Amino acid sequence: MPEVHLPALDDEEPGPEVTAPHRTKSYFKIGLEVVLISMGVFLGLVGEGWRENAEHRELAEASLRRFRAEFEANKAEVNRVHGRHVQQLQALEKYFAENGKTLVEGRQPLPQPVPDMTTDSAGVAYAAWDVALATQSLAYIDADLVAAMSSAYRMQQMYEDAHRNIQQAQYAPSAPVHSLLGHMAYFGDASIYEEQLLKQYDALFSRLDKGIGD
Image 1 (cartoon, one colour):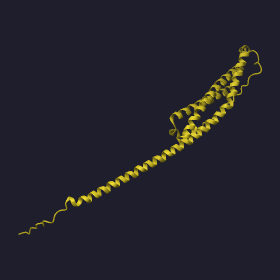
Image 2 (image 1 turned 180 degrees about the vertical axis):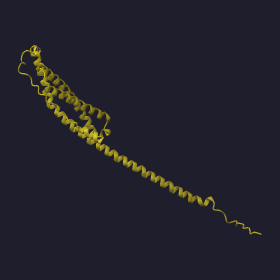
Image 3 (image 1 turned 90 degrees about the vertical axis):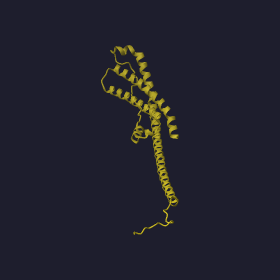
Image 4 (image 1 turned 90 degrees about the horizontal axis):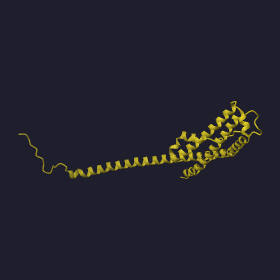
């Protein structure tokens, strides 16, 4: 007969109570590693975000300082010519009021003295705006402030367009009276543009100072 092996009563398979502590320890270790890795990734992302935000703040502040300096220089240029343009406009208006009939008839030489028609214009700059576009720093500046600055630069362009137009008219032959009327229109437009620019610059200074201070 084949030999039959009967297991001893004390040869028992290891029960759950033997492996449970080992399994619990393994699960805890794995869980701890996951937590530590997650915390490391989270802290790394937070640190990177803080670094990027700091760089953005520095970039925005540098741009605001450039805008402040440029608008200050542009204001000085506008102030340099504004008073004279107002006086030139008033002188031409008076000239036409006193000599209107002679000027309309156009049969006689222009009454003397003819008012000064020098069309000096303020040399406004745009460098700060160009740098901000190149560095993409406008994305980190308050949108309302960016809109206000854009409006001021747009007004500067309109102002320069008016001066460019009168310069072109000076090189084209025209009747003396037409030239006088053209210059009077230019001085009127230039005076309005300059007045508006001075108001816009003053309004921007406090907002730029606040942005730099923040």
